Image (cartoon, rainbow, N blue to C red; front, side, top):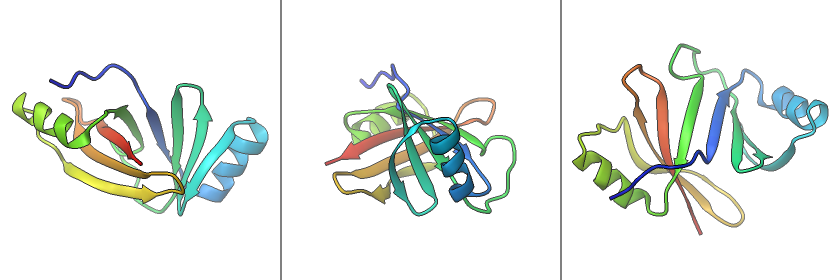
Length: 122
């Protein structure tokens, strides 16, 4: 059985990835760890901050996402489906980086907040 116990990433939807990257890096002093297109990642201790740029419409429920790291995304999805969880998006690759691929599956809580499971496949 999969039990979620830690946050691995928090996503913020931003209107301009370049401008926000400069703010979080140059003004706040966060260390950028990677960038893939409109996705910018920063090291925030035990939790990673991801800025998601683009023109996607902003509405409640899609401007913030909490990500839970799991050892096996496919197993976690199967376990949680057995508990009655309906997934909005099944496991798929989000991005490729120099040392891993980032895979995620998305679902919503009872209030409509977006949540995700994530696995870094090396």
